[in-house]
Image 1: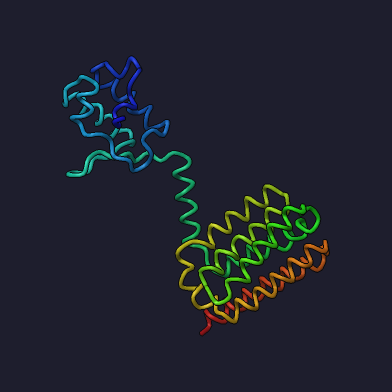
Image 2: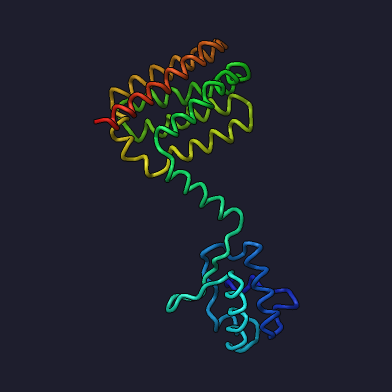
Length: 241
C-alpha cells in the first residue's frame, strides 16, 4: 500500500478542488496518519491520486503551510510540523531529562521511594516478592559489569514501585526511571558505578528485600533512605573531585 492510499474511500479523495484536498490532508495530519516530521508524498504522486493538477496540489499544500501544519524544504520535500499531544509529551520528557541535575534526581527519589517501599511492605503479593527476588539475583550476578548493573538496578526499583500497588506512584517512578536512563547520565555512571560501589549497593538491595519480605515497614523505609543517601554522597564525592 502506498502512502497516498491513506486518502482512499472518501468523496473528497476524488475531488480536484484545492480546498477539498487541503481538508483531506489536514484531517490525515490531525488524526496522526502523518505524524510530526513525516514527509508527505511528492506533489506528482498526490496529483495522480487526487486526479488534480500539480498546481492544485501546490495550492492545497500552501493552505496547510499557512496554517502551520506543513513546511517545505527545498530539495527534500514537504514535512509535517504539527505536533499532536503525544509528540509534545515526548519532547517534554526529553527536555526534563536533559535539564534535571543528578542531585535533583536523587532528591526526587528520596521524596518518593521511602514511602513507596513502605507501601510495598504492606501490599506486595507472593508474585511480587518472587519477581523482586529474581531482579535481586540479576543484580548480584552483574558484579563488576556497569551496564548490566544499571539495567538490573532499574528493574529492581521498578519492581518495588509495582509492588506498592499504587498506580500513581508507579507512574511517577516510571517517569523518574526514564530520566535515570537518559544518555546524559552515561558519563556520571562511569564514575559512580564502580565495582566497589556495586558490591555496596547490592548489600543494601539485599537488606531492602529482606525487610520487605519480613513486612518490616519501619526498617524498609530506613534502609531505602540510607541507600539513597549513599547514592547522594557518592554523587557529591564525584562532583567535588
